[in-house]
Image (cartoon, rainbow, N blue to C red; front, side, top):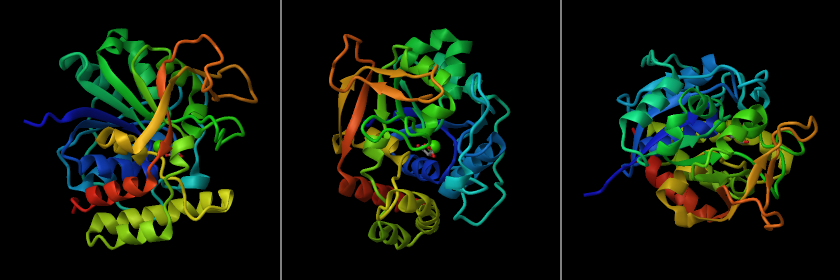
Length: 314
Ligand code: BDR
Ligand code: CA
């Protein structure tokens, strides 16, 4: 009997978040217990709505969506409409979701789910700022030991920053939350810009997705086409990094990726380097490794896998 891996996706959709959610909901290897929205790419009222839109698009209306924290732990929210558009899902025709949000707060859902399941059986998959996850740890520290693993998109080392010269967006927005998570002792796998910048949405790849022949394929192609214009211009690349789906691909086929167990500390004090992930890649300190920091991906296999999964949706 195949045992499905139980996950909670914490997200701020975001076109790339949307693709990650669709990929996860298409995967029979995964049991998505819930989607928890957090403020990030756009404010919470939009990320919660977008989460519902994406779940509905997948046809998996059995998966509950919860709304979480509207601001970082101690700072004002910073959003990224210049990348994701006004709605966060620009590229897709605006729609009103017909599935409702759950009444429970996202952090209560995370806490209650971890307490109700056997220790070491739930993986958290954060695709946005780490506010909901840190808040749940603060509210109920007893959950920390029960988390199987946290597999997250965030941070950068060799690629340095995308929102400032030093920092990646998800960590920059809520560095105090990131510090809480990285120092929690939970096994962590990090999919940073170093790896997501190898996974590019080229024209050929987008065409393959558009031609899958289902509605999801068309919508994902529309989302990717909108999303890539910003990074294509910024980096002068053929396509844009498809960040968040790397988390789901890692869960499904970790052999696509390669990384190192290293120590990562989060800069919270400096104005200049706020949210920088200080990675001891070369082992020059005696700080204990606290995560697997991924540095390489087989992008051809990644896009094959993504296409295989999207093909299974309506
Ligand atoms: C991350 O920030 C957001 O713009 C994306 O959704 C991704 O999670 C990349 O830095
Ligand atoms: Ca995201």
